[in-house]
Amino acid sequence: VFAMAKERAETDYRNRKFQQPYAHAMLASNRILETPFFTHQERLEEVSGLKVEDLMAFKTAFLANLRVTGLVVGNIDAAEAVKLFTTAETLLGSPTRATGFAPQQMAKLPAGLGLHHVQLSPDPDHVDSAALLYLQVGAQSHKLDAHLSL
Image (cartoon, rainbow, N blue to C red; front, top):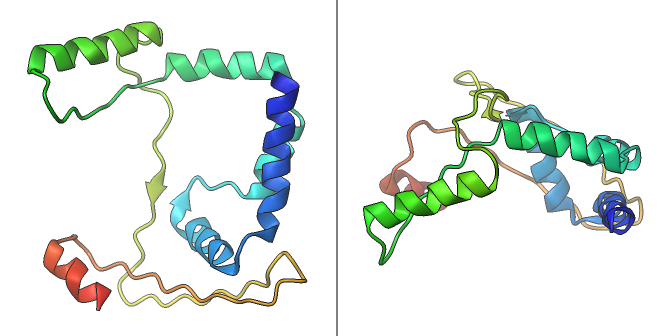
């Protein structure tokens, strides 16, 4: 099972270079804005070298630092919601709150900063192109979203 899942992940990461140009444009934007950020090639290199033992060690560390956060909407009372999440934490072996890994963070660009990045498609046979415009505009509101969509 592990070998099949590993092969599927490797194939997926290899094939991502054939994605549409807009996907590569979004990836380039994320590379600039997200910390930490890992490219598909970096992920492929990591997956390629993995062994079952590595995955089991990761599982132990992952579950030790897991924090379950959720939102319940619908026909459930507060006591049932708390019980639901307590059960989930118990089943995952992580009943205490974690403090370990820093969450992924988004960079705040300095006001007035303009950034231009050109990247050729990793697939030389792809004839399409893409342009991505990314704006940081401060606190989000419905009115601002409506104005930006126009």
